[in-house]
Each structure stands twice: as structure tokens, then as C-alpha cells.
Image (cartoon, rainbow, N blue to C red):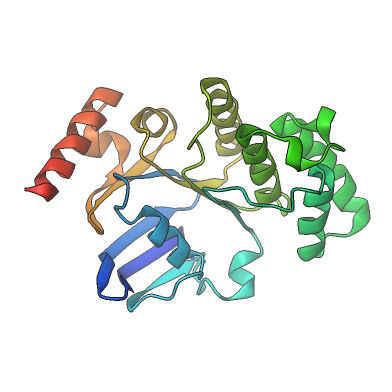
Length: 242
């Protein structure tokens, strides 16, 4: 049994002639809350897509719980929240969750209580039968989080989960993530919002221009406080641009 939920070794990813990831190596311990930060276009989403097996690396490798990401066994206990929550908008929240639950083969006696539990968790129980076409971006993000948790994953990967959310929606999401953290889930989330990273993370990595510039436990990398993280982040971004 591996001690790592995610292990990337010398990952190189190309988009045509553009090198989006440049020999990226990263390890995420099981049970850690890991903040993956960088400016726009740094390679955060590309790394996540490669980790999920949605992109194939030019070279290097990545493992999810010790298995290749395209191995179905590696996905059985994995949840993913994409940056843009695109679902069938004519469905209701409970129908969307039922759809994903059936994909995972969750039996109905287990699935229906699970749907109710998750809708309560994300605060959508009162609108469970309303069509998603009437929902705001924040509400769609809640559906996205609920579907990512339908299979009770051990590892949850979130791509810019607070993007476009208002302060109250961010607070609600943070509270849910803290609850999942207390349950021992591995949480890996990309972000360019340093305050969220400083509040939630056990460990971090900073990626700039497709390269990991710093990585490790939060306090070892930046010490205490959001300002120290902001100072290091700006220093690394400016250093890359010089």
C-alpha cells in the first residue's frame, strides 16, 4: 500500500509545440489537504487533467493511489470537481446525483439516502427537485461538489473550486472542505486565491510557467500567515518573468 494519493514523476505535457508542464514531480500524502497554486496559465489544470488520465503525458508518469490514472480501480474512490460545472441543465439536483450514482453502480437502497445526505451537506435539499437551468453558478458548484462525493471517495480533486463564487458561497465551500478534511479525506485543490490556500492547506506546491518552484508542508515552505505566502508567491512569479 502506497502512502501517497498522488505521485507524479517528471511529467512533461505538450500542447503542440508549447510545453505546458516541464518535468513536474509532486507527491501528495494520503489524508493531506494540498493546495496547488499558481498564476493563470501556469499549468494547474493541465496537471489535474493529466493526473485524472484525461491527458496523456509526453513523458514521465503519474499514479493515483499507486495505480495508473486510467485504471478503473484508481477511480473507484476518486472524486473530481471541475472548474466549470457543466451538467444536463434540464435535470434536477437529485436526478444529476442519481445519474452519477448509477454510473458507479451504487445500489438503490444505498444511493437514495446518499443523495439526501449530500444535498443536505451542500445546502440544496430544499431545491432538490428544481431544474438546474434555474441555478446560479454558486448553486451549480454545489451540485458539482455533491456529485464528486457520491461514491464516498478517499481522494477529492478540485480545479479552482472557488472561481466566480461570492464570499458567502466561498465560506460554505470552505466549511464543507474542512469537514471532509476532518474525516481523513485527501483533498487536492488548485487555486490562485492565496487566502483559501493559507486557511485550508497542510501542504502546498507553487507552479509557475509549467515548473514547480516550491513544494512541501505549508509552514516549512512559507512559515505562518497569508502574507508570507503572498510574498513568496509574488517573488516566484516575478522571478519567472525576469
